[in-house]
Structure formats: C-alpha cells, structure tokens
Image (cartoon, rainbow, N blue to C red; front, side, top):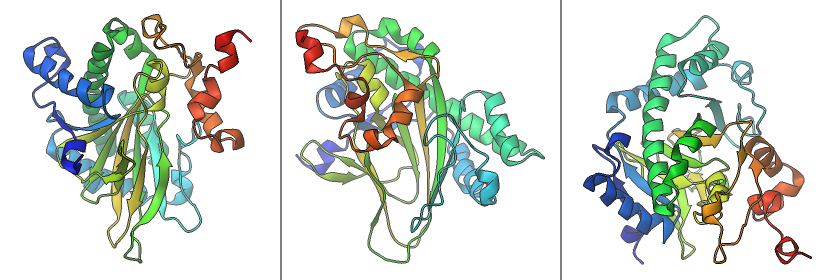
Length: 322
C-alpha cells in the first residue's frame, strides 16, 4: 500500500453537529468508517472551524510566552493524574509540556493563566480558551461519527456529560546534531480521542498496519486525529488506539498542541452492552481514568506491552469461569 493511501484526509470543512444526518455528514462518516473501523486508528481532519489567525496567535505568541517563563513558575502546573501537569527537566532531553485542564471552560483556563501570571494575562487566556473551545467542536463531530459507525449513537449525550477536554502545549528544543532523534518513544495515549496540532516543524509519526513509521507533515488547516485507549476500552476493542511517536532533529524549535477528550475523574468507563456479543466478548472491565493513567506510570504498567489490558482486561479464566 502506498504512503498516499495510508495518509487519509477527511474534509470536515463546513460541517457542524447541527448537520448530523445530512448527505455531507454521512459522506464523511462513511469515509471515517472505512478508515478507522476497518483499517487504522487515525486520520487527518481538514477543519475550518479554527480561524487561521487564532492558530497563529496560539503558536507564535501564547506558547512562546508560556515557555519563556521560569521553570519554577511552570512547575506550578500540577495534576492528580500522571503526565497531566508540567512535564520536563529530563536529562539530555530538551522537552517541556504544560496542560490546561478543562480548557473549554473559561474559568479553568483563567485559573491556569493566573497560576502562571498572578498579575493576569487576559490575551493568553482568551487565545487558549478560544482555541480549546473551537477544537472541542471538531472532537465532538469525530466522536459522534464514531458512535454512529458503531451503532451506539444513543450514548453520545451521556458520553459528552462524562468527558472533559485538556490542552497540552509542548516545546521540543532544537538539536545540534542533524540526524533525527526520538524525543517521545512509541506510545498510545490514555485519553478518549486525541487531536495533534503541529506548527511548521514536523515530528509526529504513526505506525502503519504494515509496520512502517509514517511521518505526518504539518498542515495549517488540518488536525491529526488519533483513537486513544479510553475509547478502545469503551468500544470493547472495536476501535484501536493508534501507536505513534515524535522524532525531531535539526535547528528549529518545535511547538505542538495536543488536545484530548478524557473521562472526568469520577466517571467509570464502561463498555455499552450493545458492543458485547458472542463475536465480541467483553474485553475490558469498567475502569477509572485517573487510576488507569497513574497505573501506566508504575513499574508494572511500564513493563506491560498493553497497559489497558493489564489494568482492566478480562482474563481468560474469567471468561471460562475457572
């Protein structure tokens, strides 16, 4: 299979949730069904719902402002979930990331902003909140189509009430060596759906079905959509989390934004009964997202090839009643 046929672009331009059921909606959903359900757990979404000026302001102004702050200030960004607060200060690795929890809520974005700038930074708050809010509309369209493909769209409203949205902003420092360097090793995300936004400098690579790493070039009007582990668990394995990595090299600093939908702290992720049958026996017991994510960073979780299965998988002896 050629690289062109593996790098699928689906055009969400002009679409909104209000257009669910229209011919243009059904066309994109059919393309998604073919790609995500039958072939691979990722695609590129072309989307015009985020103004180019807003995207430029986020990367060219807000992210640079954020990462220029002193380390002790950035380390105020803490979380009860592993890898969801400030990340950085790794020996031999010039990489930092900070996450804004509940980025679609202006009060939460304001709290993050005031944590970084106690004197306030209204422009930063407005840009980050607007970006997160507009991307949440794309995520909801993607997720509704996925549930339609699975025949369980009746759970969409309930799922919306059980999810929140995070925005992780990341910086990869320039390298002196010309060869590429693995900055983030192969992994799958723990969230429900991930949208990766690359700005000018490439780095994201996804693993194809035939075992090749495919580089995803930056695009000013598209977003890389990755199925992640909480969706894999919720869908009883009908949808598979996509393995990906980041490789950077050269003299340019790389900025990216990773937008993710994730279950709220008090939610138990549980497979709908419609997705369990003789052909698809139950694969995952109900699980709590913060506990699962924290498990992935334990010694036991780190050594597992499939942390979701290790944490909440249904064992064979459970299935046979042993």
